[in-house]
Image (cartoon, rainbow, N blue to C red; front, side, top):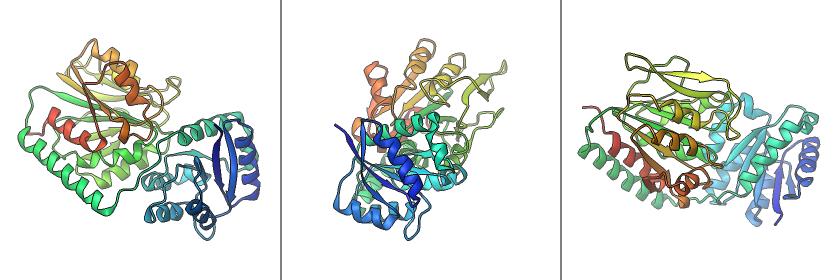
Length: 360
């Protein structure tokens, strides 16, 4: 069935070009257009669409303001940000994802550059993912408070009764579509004294992972940073893989672990690819590796974890289907019978703490 698309952009030329790109693909049809956030809000309050392509900089009501209003009035929509602002304004993009946008593409400054095959392919691939994602659900204030209360109790329990676990461990996480928002439900709940370093691969292009790390660090007790070449792994720190490169972990003869980047081609259609991260841990000296696979399209992580399992003791946590924006990567892990646990998003932090403990 053809997916119904709402296109929101203040540029008449850009609307025409993007409309042509969308309508030339039999999977989609632009059924409504808006020139600003106010018009889009009116349409979304009266109609349902399979996906919304949303610009950021618009008069009267911009893209971020629209996302805030949709959240305020609990109007669900599958939104893909497409703006020339998303490359330079990476912080704006992270904020959009935080407010409920499911994914984003960088739109060229020139409408004519949108006709380049590379842009069209990426644009349509991302739109397909968004249009087939789970519809966002807005919890009520009371539901949010209850979830926070329950989660806090579980995390406190995990910290209290599993203060120290034997052996050296590392946590290796992977996420894609829906990840930036989901990570805000996990990373801020990890304690500053977590007894393990955390490696994180979130599928994002170069320039955006620094803003993601910055935002997660602002929200968290645990230290979060974009991993740099040569960084030595430390407990109680989350290392976010740099966009546009593959993150690996090197083990020195002295048993120290450092970050190394490689510029190999995309794998599983993504760069960074979590498979490289997992496979780089095969020769490490960690006693156990806790693998966490969260929301995202495709199967990144499955091959790497399968290979890792042949050489190391691992514990694999997969995010449950009902809490995923896209149940692709976790589904692949479950289908491959690699998952030790399948848990809802709000329980992931608790399970991580239970398995790695806190520093004594």
